[in-house]
Every structure is written in structure tokens, then in C-alpha cells.
Length: 131
Image (cartoon, rainbow, N blue to C red; front, side):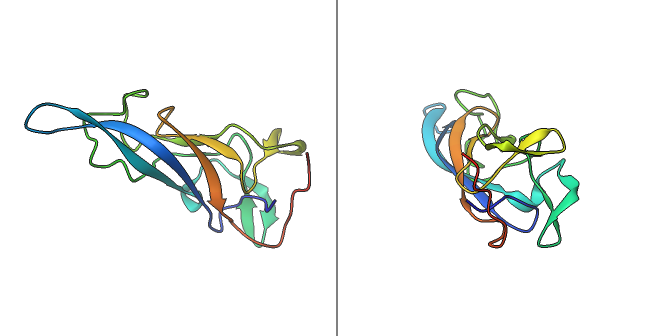
């Protein structure tokens, strides 16, 4: 799978169940959740893929989108537009002390409210062929 970097990439998750205000009170509604790879911090500035810093499991995306209307917070996390982080990676490829993440790496989005996955590649040159 293609390695993740700051160049691009997008994680999506569903369902991000958030409480949404209504006249009858808060209603739980599932929303899609989107995390953009170029906003991720901290990255690995000493390893460049296509001229952009690489991502590892220590890299997180501080803000996600898609659940913006659920302002009464997420059912599981108690947050809206919370951070995203990867929970799987290429565990035999270590970058700056942590496993490198790649396309199809599973993520937790909006803190812990929504499972997701990297579905849009960051770049299409560097492959991580690790188990």
C-alpha cells in the first residue's frame, strides 16, 4: 500500500453518531467523518516521500469535518470535529520510533467516536510492502 505523507490523503469514517439539536431535544444522527492528511501533526520531517514529510503512528490530525451539525457532541467521545489518529500501520517499517502508516490504515476519528480508514492516497510513488 502507498505510504502516508503530508502531500494529500484523506481518511473517512462512518457512522460518526452525534447528538443534533432539534425542537424535541437532541437527536442522535450518524454523520460521515472526514480527516485531511495535509493537516496532520507531528510528521517525520527527516523522511520525505515526494518532497513531503512522512507520517507514522505518532502523527494525528487535530480536526475532522463532516459532523459539524452534531453540535451537542458525539455519543461515544463527547466531542465534535475532534482529532483523528491511526491505530494500524506497517509495523515492520519504523519512522522516527513509530510504525509508518499507509493507505488502508485503520483510524479512530472524532476522538474515539468513529472508526475510519485512509482511502485517498497521499502519494503514488512509495509503497510499504510490510505485513
